[in-house]
Image 1 (tube, rainbow, N blue to C red):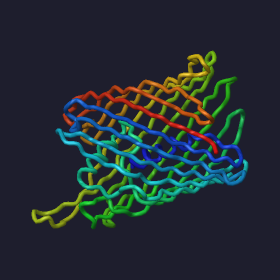
Image 2 (tube, helix red, strand yellow):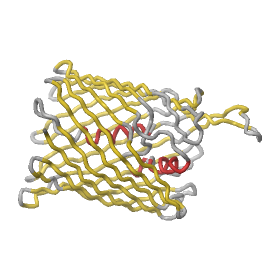
Image 3 (cartoon, rainbow, N blue to C red):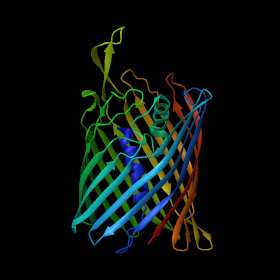
Image 4 (spheres, rainbow, N blue to C red):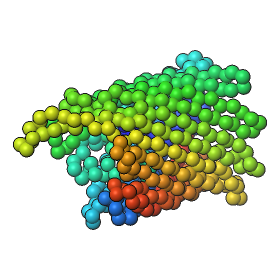
Length: 378
């Protein structure tokens, strides 16, 4: 289920970065995105990297209707015991229609179009497994998750100086074949329900925003049988935006808590015949993120936007094992540039952190991120 959240984040990262277009204007964005890590011995992988070329288009259709389309090509690599495993190609495409049904209600319908590779062989599965580690923060992890349709509605109002918003969404997901080595295996991801409540308030030139999101899932199924019941998730987040001198700054924090889940495992005899199943409890998790982003004038009409964040993840099995726990610190920034009506955002950051292995040893990791994002109207 974490994979689904990551994919949603990757899709929204670029489409939400598109400016709200003037009436009749189409806004397009794209770029290149590289994130790579190297690991000290002990994690089972020596290095991991992702190179991605995302593209997004926002198309207005009148005053109240908006269409968003997102797609990307991605290449992931994992180095393990002097071997390099790869997974590359287009990812799933996202198409979304949003209607401002009333001045206070926004209704949207989105579809995940299965254009990506969802049937992985053994080597591709290794890449997908490593890239899906939450603490590393890769924008793409699976390339394909089958078809899905999500409907949502959001409403906002004001009361006592506060802005209050409520949103709800439900995603219906289609069955697909996840294994290139076993074409008889079918996988039915569970449907997702999501509810969010948020509020904000202005204090002079500053703004405080806070919210809470609850997410629950139905059972995942393999070959028509229950496979995995993901634990419920609860996320709290807050940000404070303010001006300091000539710059604008924002401090933010979030806490994502995931309950234990239930994983059903098949039991087979020495001949490989199915004789029954057993259910094990999966780890609960708490991921805390905090950071700051701002603007600093550097002359010539340019500004530097520093971006620093810290992530701490706590994973705990029922037996107390906390393998996969760790922390990550990232620091860097970008410089927005305007060229002939096109906005360009070159960005670079460095990463330092550690991840705990199965023996309880903290394994150090370092990483680098390079991005170049552009946006233009036509």
